Image 1: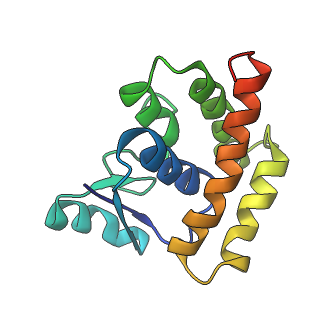
Image 2: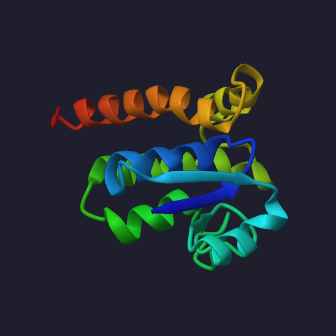
Length: 145
């Protein structure tokens, strides 16, 4: 399956790509384009758009969820660790729109992704370690490691 999002991925886009690869479609193909191209690429390529205007999973939906939360609610609602991650990602990504983020460390680290990676594919690969570690830590804390 193809997925499409805005280029220069950070918090929610990197986390959503991780969610897709780890829990939904390990062979997913990702396309990174300008924000105003996501909707057209979604239609032309039959891709699933996320975190962009006109995307199936927009940056913030009508329920106030970021794309990670919406996709997790739809595809993996039974996983309490992913639910906790969704809260953290929402706090880092959407709270910056007007209030102090609930997870400033994740936001700060994510803003550095494009600064240390040559492109979005490399960001996706390298950031997977961060989200794997967060998932493992939350899972251990819940006593289900």
